[in-house]
Image 1 (tube, helix red, strand yellow):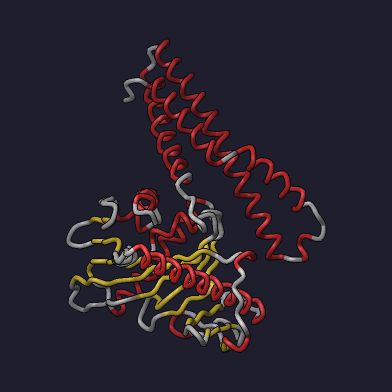
Image 2: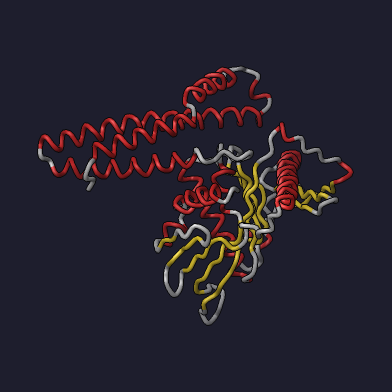
Length: 367
C-alpha cells in the first residue's frame, strides 16, 4: 500500500506536467483542428493514401489528447477516493485507490518514455522485416511466432498493421515477412527490437522431442516520407510479377498480381503480394525499397561519423534477447537485463517492459 498517497499523486502530477511540456498538447490540438478541416474537404479521398495518412494522424492526436485528459481526471478522482477512504475508514475503498494509483504510475511512466523519442526518424511509422535464421523448421516456426508477438502487441495498442509480403517455409512457419506498423512513433518505439532473437524449446519437428535452439532476425526501419527524396531510376530496378502463394505453396489468387523488385546496384530485393492489383503491389514494393535505401544511406552516414570519431564499437543489433521455454521458463534481454518468467504473456504480445527499457538503453548509448 502507498504510505503517502497524497505525496505520490502530487509527484505524478508534476511528472505529467513535465511530459506535457515536451509533448505540447496545445500544439497537438491546433494540428488536430487543421487535420479535421482537411478531413472534411470533399476532394481529400481522391488521393486515398494521403487521406488515410490524414485520418491516421488525426486519430492518433485525438487519442493522445484524450489520454492526457483521462490521466488528469483519474489523478483527481484517485485523490478524492483516498480522502474518502481515510474519512470513512473504508479499507475496500483504500485498496481500490491503491490499485488505481499503481496503474496511473505505470501509465505515466510509459508516457514519459515517449519524451525520449527525439531521434530524426523516431516519429515515423515502422517497417518490420523478420527472417528465419539458423534452426531449420524450428527457426521458420519461431519467425512466425515473432511476427505474431509484434502483431498482437500492435493490436493491444490499437496500432493498424499491414502485411506486405510473406514467404512461407516448406515444412512449417515462414522464411520471411515484411509488415508496416502504421502509427506515429512506431519506428522510435520498435527500433530497439532490431537484432537476433534466440529461442530455446522442445522441438515440434524432432521425432525424439529434443531441445532445439533456433534464431530469427528482426529488422526495423522508418517508413519513407515525401521529404526524403529517394530517387530510384527505372534502369536501376528489375520488376518481376508472379502469382501470390500461401502456406505449402498453394495459390492465393489466379492472377500474376504479386510484384518483386530487385534494386540492381545494391542487390536489395523486396516483394509485395497483399493486394489483388499489380499496380498497388508495385507501389507498396517501391515504398518498401525506398525505405530500405533510406536506411542504407543513414547507416553509411553513421559509419562515416563513427570512423571520424574513432568509434569502432560493434553494432548493438546482434543477438539481443533469449527466449527459453525449456528446461525452465525465462525471457531475458541481453542489453537491458530485463527478464520475466511469464513467457505466455510475452508470446501473446506483452512486450512493453522490454521495449520501454530498450528505449532508455538506446538513449544512454547515444543511439
